[in-house]
Image 1 (cartoon, one colour):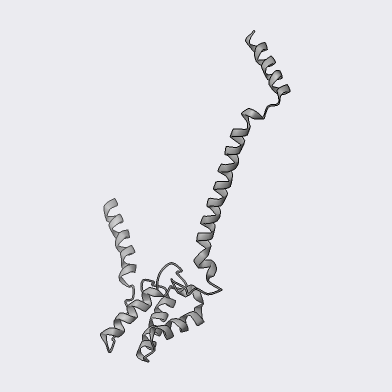
Image 2: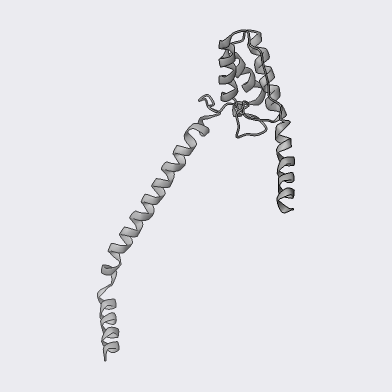
Length: 156
């Protein structure tokens, strides 16, 4: 009985996947189909934020795919389509944003943080080494006598 219930639940869960819409577009040239694939793989879904619009099932991704198909039909080149999407959704829509003043932090921020981490680790290690080398010789003559006296007292 438990197996039948599990199978029924699994079947109901799979039914939702079966109704997922698949976009079918008819292209005049095979080159347009390849450009469509490249563009949909290069542009990020504004809603999903971690998927390209080719793989996303979000309604906005479907709208963007239709928009790209329309623009390809109008004869626009890839750069015009990408510029349109960037104007409309910002640099975030591109997986590889152009290097400019607005996106410099995206390109160089991780390297800067990594370099900063290495500098901090270097400074910490260097300070610890200096502290280790200074600590045995840092006793004054008076402190050394007192230490010797205390050690002699404990041995008796």
